[in-house]
Image (tube, rainbow, N blue to C red):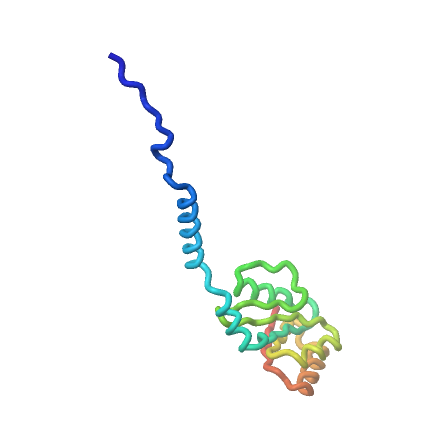
Length: 156
């Protein structure tokens, strides 16, 4: 005797109501996404009261490593590589704190503007060469315009 023919029932493993199944799948996906992301309204409310982020200006003569310093700080905080350091760069340092980095060109007018607005100045100095005249000019400008906090960064 031959075995009975294998029967194929296409509805045996399908769902009874496809619309209800699609809604259930979408609801589960939405619930999973809610667990992954924090609500943006809370972040915006805390930042609105906080005001603008502090401005960290990186100042020094050309070739001393200002761009390299900013790139390494951005890499430290964001784990992203920065191709070029043009304009102010705002970085989230924690969940509620931001910092803005600004590279100051070696120009007297730009130094004067930075001396007025900076909250912290990273003063880059080439340790092999020593202090240049522009560095002393910038320190004198900061004295007349409120003198923000200054940190020296010596490179070699």
